[in-house]
Image (cartoon, rainbow, N blue to C red; front, side):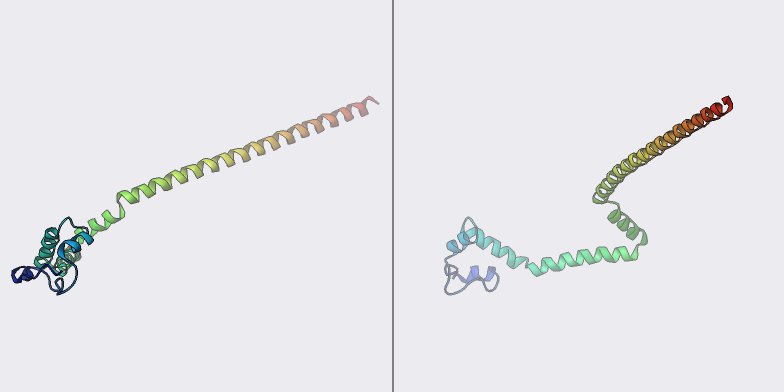
Length: 147
């Protein structure tokens, strides 16, 4: 960024962003999607004040602190586990499972009903057949007695 040669400004920017040759600040800003060179410089100043590593360290410390709290507090750990297991996503999966199981139960009931109707029909036919055979046997006996 050739245009940045002022010593005061250089001290406000992170190391490695200024060179003796390269893009003009406005061209670099346009290339990076900034509305102006000034907007790019302002963001670079923020990076110098709050480096990414510092933000990463802060986030890791916050996450670690919460885990340490869970380790030291069994009730908090139990609640965290319960929240992880019983959340909206899990409830949606359970609702879907219940819907699938309900449909399967209906299909099973239909199959059982069909089988029961088949068995009933088979019993009715056998009963009719037995009654016809009984009647035929009675007619034969009557005709033998009539002789």
